Image (cartoon, rainbow, N blue to C red; front, side, top):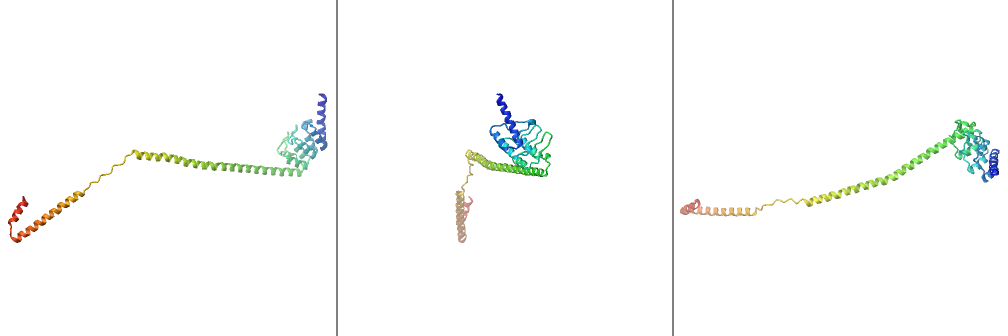
Length: 246
């Protein structure tokens, strides 16, 4: 038990020393033998902090490839990027930024990596990266909004068609009972009786016949009177007159 604990302590010390000295091959070998690369030394300094402080790019790459987080901070809140910027390590700074190191992380004293940059080249590098990051975030936000709009438009069109279809179906359903109601009313209401027409043909015929007979009698009478006057025979006339008077 004692020898095992001593072995683990020895491995951790060798890893820190190899990272500080910049021996990438030794660091790789120790990581393959399951060295605790997350173990912290004084002030919670990990192997990646020692490597970044000294600007050992290959050691940092080896540790990151083995699973070390570039966001790890020590007791003072310093990350590998803080140390790289502070030491004006341009290539190491570029690598850490490429791997997603944060420019907004602050130390316990409230310092960001940009606050610790003393080299103009490092400052320019950080500002350009920050601007590119903002542009990328804006583009991602716009793309997300476009996808959301496209999604809403795609889901809205069928809904509108469906609403129209439902409206038409509703109108058709309302029209059917209405028609049935009209047909029922038509069956229930008896037809109105038509006014009977009075045939007056026989009356007209009778009057015409009577008038014809009267005209014929008057014609006979006129002929008779004319004959009587011409013949001075008044006796028949009187008799006829008496008959007519009676």
